[in-house]
Length: 630
Ligand code: NAI
Image (tube, rainbow, N blue to C red; front, side, top):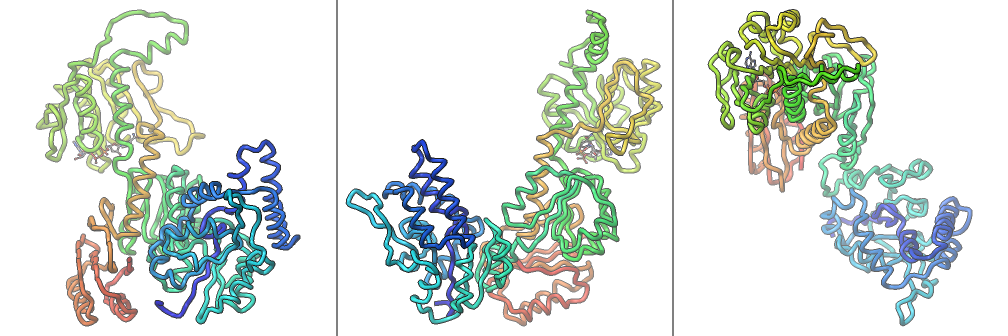
């Protein structure tokens, strides 16, 4: 015995997500033509009993008279139930194993299927209080033991009375009959478990609501898989982030709220209170004012590439880690660019438009294959380098220019200057970032330097190309054609009109900033950013964080991880370590990284720590945030 406490746990819609007797009926009646009617009747009887319209005894007698299981059916049910353990029970298996002597499963279901399911969690049959079938020699159930206390009205109460537990009892369940254990003074407190079914009336009667089993373990200070129950942590996802993100967090038990739209400052100031994780795209601005109201925010996910919409300095000062998706849509941009290179080399768009108007113009004039042509990439980052690989496999010769030394992939050749690239390339594609110094890097002199029939593509930033110069180059036939996806000024929404001097020019492909917008990219972004945020919240990992010092941490397998974020001033690590030494904490690993603003120290300790250590660590001057993980 670890202490003198006992934990009484309900089975149906608590330990497992379903009502097992209903599942059993489904299995037994599978091939019966009148199956649906019978199942409805069984459901209805369960409901009547729950609503107090009929007694439990009546309900059980009537339900079991509608179907007769045999041992084989029960075996099938056990296999099915093993796959339907409530997620928060499944992730806390070690608690069951450790405390098995103090746990009782008390259920008005049947022992024949409950015992084998909970046995894999270390609970012995003697700790399962439930009904029992009576079988004949063929293994067919011919009834149930009516002397079993659990087959009677108030069965759980009677079974608990008979058990005479000597110690504090804590009960958790999803039904009124579980609450009765507490009501009759047989438990110190009752937790209404709402992960599978939320019964408002029961929540009102309960001492606590447990949206998952972690909450029960957390409140009772028991060993658990989550340092802090996820159900206590709010996730706010705005701007129609792919639903995979919400599903990802819901699966872990977070309290998730999603909105399809962006939010203005005032609304956000209200909404961000008590939120632990916020996910936004490009239209929601996280200003300093908003962040000042974010009392529990741990991490921001920009489910997009850019992070200009976030006040990164303010986030850093407040110890909030920001993550984005720097390359989840790279492939989408690359694929569109390849397509455009081919379309422009063949005048496809103009020809198609003419066809729509009834003009048949079959001619090879000016139409070229892309094989053997020279593709010049300005910027050899995520997109440039990926395009390099794909283009080469289509037979293009790739040249690139980047202001930073970059490893040339495949047979790509680095140019020493932009001019060199412009002169050599048949196709020029821009993939630089949006830094200020890149404003209008492609203007009239650059177009003049290009080959007469060059093709020009910009799917990077609207600001890097002088549009007037591009229009002139196209009109003067300095270049053959262009594809433009990004513009210096873009309509704010799909309702606003698009106006540009590029409209109506021949061999110009215009797209509304969608190079990176594909279903796959949205899904990749949702997966990537959700994962990064989770890794930070659960493990402290800051790999690829936009504003935190990047540390790739090993997963903590045992012990505790103490995470300390502080202003980057000298001496903090020494203070942390002297507190650890004074309190006899055994450090098993320590990681430190700083950037200009903050220091990030992770200390893994093997021993348990006291509240005093936590207080001392939090009180170190210049501390921004402190948290503990298991
Ligand atoms: P990245 O940051 O990985 O690569 C940019 C590269 O450009 C870096 O290697 C950098 O050194 C280089 N560079 C910067 N200024 C330069 C200059 N003046 N001359 C030559 N090289 C220069 O960025 P990534 O992911 O490859 O994205 C490239 C651009 O594409 C970005 O501007 C990004 O915003 C844009 N983008 C557009 C999308 C769309 O839907 N149209 C979707 C995704 C990205």
